[in-house]
Image 1 (tube, rainbow, N blue to C red):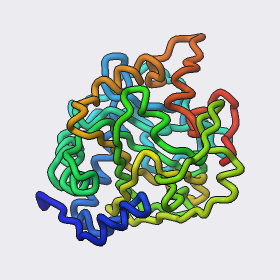
Image 2 (image 1 turned 90 degrees about the vertical axis):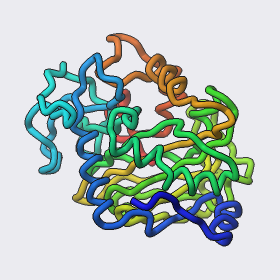
Image 3 (image 1 turned 135 degrees about the vertical axis):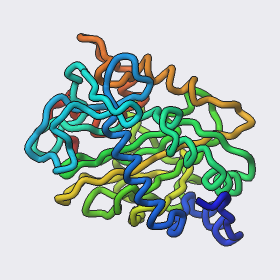
Image 4 (image 1 turned 30 degrees about the vertical axis):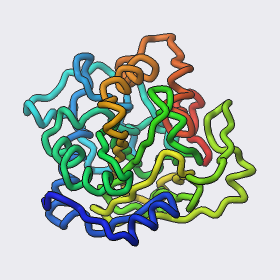
Length: 309
């Protein structure tokens, strides 16, 4: 991989005006294949009490799973041994009523490839240019939007971050697989980072009246392409109505001047919205649901049905 990414002044200005930027040539085809391999490795990590990563996971194997879903217990690529994980609680209900894997968080420090990519000079260089100051990795996740899985309601990300500190954040979306409107790709409202976007504090999502009047722009991506946006940009994504599963890496960064907040963020998340296999029976995690689960398919488990977005 090349060591830096130099942006043109036109790209920097476009990001400042629109609140987002798409980079089509960040990864080579060979690097994209590595990205896809790494994402599957994270998907297959074991789910036991001692692991530091945070899977929001499935407790059964519905018939709608793709052929890439192993019938064996998860294989850990770091140890080449199968885990003896206890049955995890489900975290999303899809369009067929089946409970499926939704995402994994907090894995970069435990995977050499992702650690190099997400904390390396290529991505940090482009973010430093857009922020006009050095940035550090704040959090990371892979969303597994399996075929039939639900979308994410219109929202802004700052709602889930400012309890740590009211600071500047930038997020990258790195497409592991092609993201289209058919399979639930992202839509944004250009320039909304400069608007007073109304948030309904009952669910932390954008007020429906504003959503209906806004102009939503599709951000379709091919595998290996990247979208950058800020934590105050309105965005949403629909359900995956295609026959194919797709994955996407999201990584959020904060200003280096504010310090390394990665561990602080995940300590709070582990307490308020833990990985599903770490949850205590009878605990509702209401604070975490509002802070970290708002507008997402993760809340579909409580309702027993796929959320309408």
